[in-house]
Length: 126
Image (tube, rainbow, N blue to C red; front, side, top):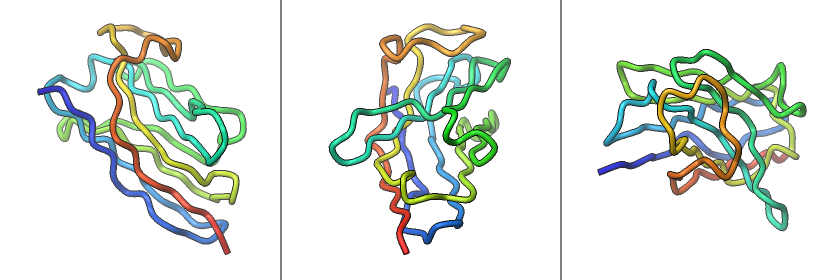
């Protein structure tokens, strides 16, 4: 059964760090682009980062560049989002999602993500 399970969220002070994990089951994670999204209260869901199949490319939202790093551990079938220098505006529910098409060497459009996890809450507050 295809499943994405996020974990690693929590509450941190500004400037702190968290590492989110997206554990995949039912498919081989390196064959698909995986994206991380977030949704803050009252705001639309936005894509934070994406890693293409086989890690050919990685993309980031401008506001998280140089602070967040997406990576993949194929042995664990897991995609990570390392978040450093966290800011209050990073607060939200973070979701990982899988491309509906395999072997795409670029990040898909948002509408092309077909499978989503349940999300993990990240709160950045002093």
